[in-house]
Image (cartoon, rainbow, N blue to C red; front, side, top):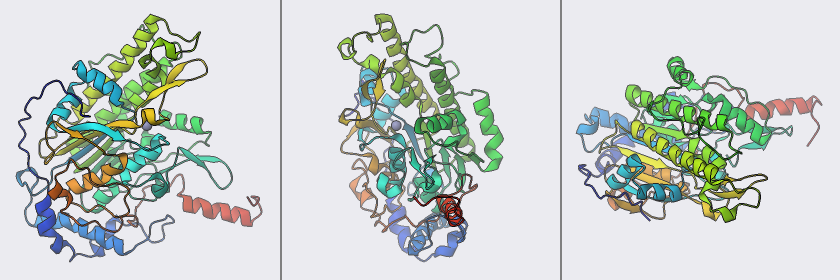
Length: 490
Ligand SMILES: [Zn+2]
């Protein structure tokens, strides 16, 4: 299906094909470069984590050289159609096609509707089990959870305590690491498992910047408190970005908080928590806008959590009263109030998306995706929402950019395909070990323009701060403690 955006207004965009000329013409040149060209992107060999230097590094050096070759030949961004524009990927956790369709029919999501008119839209297939970190890491790496290693929220460590997965547990490089190694500037804001921080060419705001969110994850999984060091890289950005959270900065200051008293909500809603989500998404959007404007990253990736958290409390309002067990049926007022709040939160997110993408033009790639949809779940004393079965397996995708046909429908695209699609759009090779392929909404000649590399898995990642310690180091410590007799054999 495609989202019916009400009108089929012309876009005014001149559609040009992304980057095949870069790939075709420069590819022979770039193989002349070798690994030394980007040793600054590499971690020291003494690093305890999993990546090792290999011939694949040479491939990345080649990719990196693409940018070098481009600057040497005077490719200067938007004025040269051979150079792909900038990319922004906006993740909306839990955005459901069911609500998007209902709101599109009433013209209530103007920014997403505009993206649908100017590009491609449709459902994005997820993978069960749909725990958010599994899926977002798949979106960010093109790998299955088993390949990228982040298979849930937490895992029992070797002394039996639950521990949240962190960035050093990711066994496959994320798109931002590949792009940074290839010489592009990146901006990463609030993506899953971005703490400890990676050193990249650009800015990373780790998901640990939202301390309450991390507390919540610790609580949810019974994990020990996760230590937190620096959450923003580079340090120079720290103060001005943290200030945005402190100030409850938002790019849409006139948007009314959908959960503020005296709004009527179902009794199981934790009003304070949803009000906090409202502020946090605003601050994340403000940070993104600031980074996009001042840093002008080539590749920006941002995640807005709010819709997921709000839907966990409110999805019950999407179901008719017979879905509620006796005694739980909300009054018509609370049901209407909950529905109004849920839909208002979608409108709010749409407004944030509109602000974030304001500076992106027809030469750029703007993509909005969700990791899954939602379905009703009968809890102990409430009818809420979750994402467990096939009923919730479809999220949404919108993509507008050079080479993408306006008003077209996305079919058969899955969460595995996002990283391969963006790499292809940029004129970079995908990898043979990626689970996904480039989406078929990119023109065939673009998809066929660059030969895939075997893998990006051995790309080295350098971290800023290793608190909590990378898993390899922790294992060494556990091993030493075991040798000293402090820990029993498992
Ligand atoms: Zn999710």
